[in-house]
Amino acid sequence: MPGQQKRRPRLKTPDTIARPAKGRHNDRKCIASGEALSPTAQCIRFVLGPDDHVVPDLAGKLPGRGAWTTASEVAVRQAVKANAFSRSFRGQAKVIEGADGLVDLIRAGLEKRALNALGLERRSGNLVMGFEKVKEGLKKSDFVAYIHASDSAADGRDKILKIISAMPGACTVVSSFSGMQLDQALGSTNSVHIGLKRKKALSTFLKEVERLAGFLPAYEEHGGNPE
Image (tube, rainbow, N blue to C red; front, side):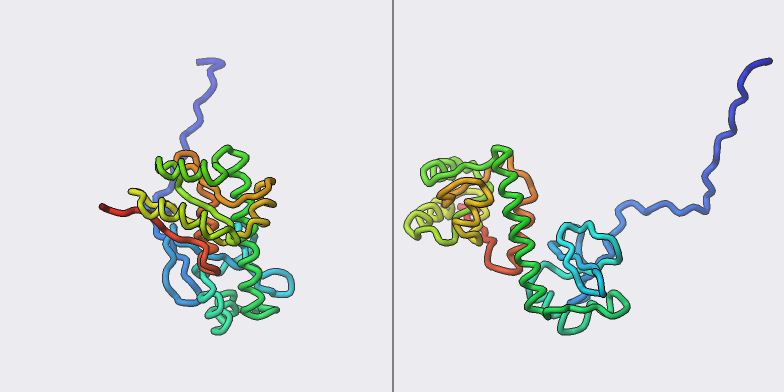
C-alpha cells in the first residue's frame, strides 16, 4: 500500500558461526603442578607488569595474559623454582625479590583484602562483637564464623572454642589477625571476639580468608559433630 513502510528482511545467523558450548569447563591450570583448576578452586592470578615483572593480580582484574597457581605458598615457590612463569608468559618473567618476596607480597595483599572485607561486614551490620554476645550467639548457631584476635587471652578463646566444638553445624574459626589489625579494620577498640552472622554474611571475607590459608594457618573448621 502507498506510504506503508517496507518490512526489513530478518537477518539469518549462518550455521557456520560456532556458539559457546553450554557447561564449558574451565581450562585454567596451575603452572606449578600442571593440574586443572576448577571454577571454584582457590587460586592466585599473575600478570606481567612493567619491565616484565611478575605481579600478583589478587582481584583478578588486571589486563594482559594471566598465569595461575593454586592459592598456596608451596605452589608459588615451586613455580618460581621451576621457572614456570617464563614458560607460561612465553618470555622473560622476572621475580625481582625471589620466592620470599613474592610470597610476602601475596600474603600482605590477601590480609589487606580480607580485613577490608571484614570492615564491610561490620558496615553491613553482619558482625556481633564481645565475649558474652558471641558466646550466646554460638549457642544458638547464629554464626558462620568466629574471628578472634591472635593475641587474645587463651582463657576466653578456649571457652568459645569449646562451645564451637559441640555445635551441630560447622563454624569457621579465623585466628590470623592481631587485635590491632582488627581494631583498624573495624574502627573500634578491643576487637577480640567477633561473630559473623550465618544468615547475613557476605561471601567475600571467607573467600579471602580461605585463600590466605595457603600462606598462613588462618582457616580452621570446628563443629559439625554428627552426633
